[in-house]
Length: 409
Image (cartoon, rainbow, N blue to C red; front, top):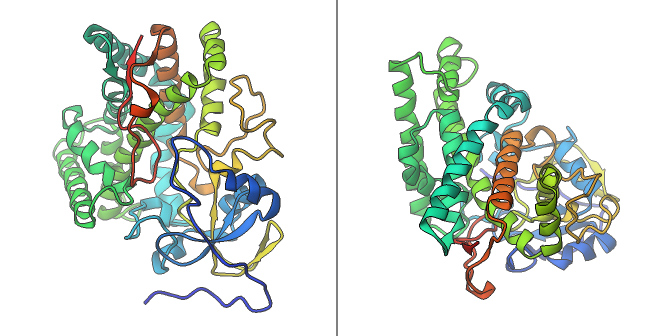
């Protein structure tokens, strides 16, 4: 039975606004966020599905909601969680709080340390160079999404996790179930998830038949088999499947997003071409600037009464933190609506914050750095090969991105 939210006596609770505030427009941040940061930083919202929630729009308030131990994710499992999807999304570790979350995260975190990810950079560069070589050989116009943005992160996560790259078309299709809001029918989402879990289950069985394989999936299987208290069989399969899907889906989307933004800021692109050493700072600025999500999701529930942004959040109430809004907060980022690849102080929340900070952040950073540097240096004349209005954007998904990106050089 779904629990109801606590009563809110002795408070004046404003009426809820429909959220998201507008239909996503390319990579434009809705100006409503800026207005709310000034006048109503904690506002009530009603998502398409689920119960009402508070929405935090200021940087410090978002950090509080995501990082304060007085907020948690686990209650979402028992509640009618505010969401963009008809069904509650599969979210694996994202529905856990410590110590369960810590138990699972610890098993995979060591595979994504800065040192281990850096060791993958030469291989990632090799893959990127090969993909660009192949695209150049085909000649313009070519679809950047098809030829570079999609295969690069998929091949890297396949090699890290131990998944056959030859199966990429299958699991890339199934992965849409995890980021779909309305792009797929409900029955298709369930079918794709079942396919993904079944596929991972087959790979797990293969690792047990050949226990000497040295990859992340093999390490997870050994962790399960040597000490069953560390994770259950279901947790093993869903953790590995989640890593496979999340380990490529957002980076596939961000590579063309970053190129799109750079092409629309030619002064900054020229700056980057003149000084490729700016690539790491440029990636951080693009992570801040690009609003990847169509709206906020994965609410945190207050474990006790907490004051946030001058508002009393009652125990049990859900709060959403807008990363896109926080990353445009002028109290933290000078001239926040301007892309500045040389920005020195950039504590963006592009990978979230707190215990649910993206476990693959270092891997995504490295892949994005390699992709941006390779495209900027190898294709100095890179440009769109079609008029802007012909670009097709994803619809009915949790993320914003291009379905295709025809380019010339």
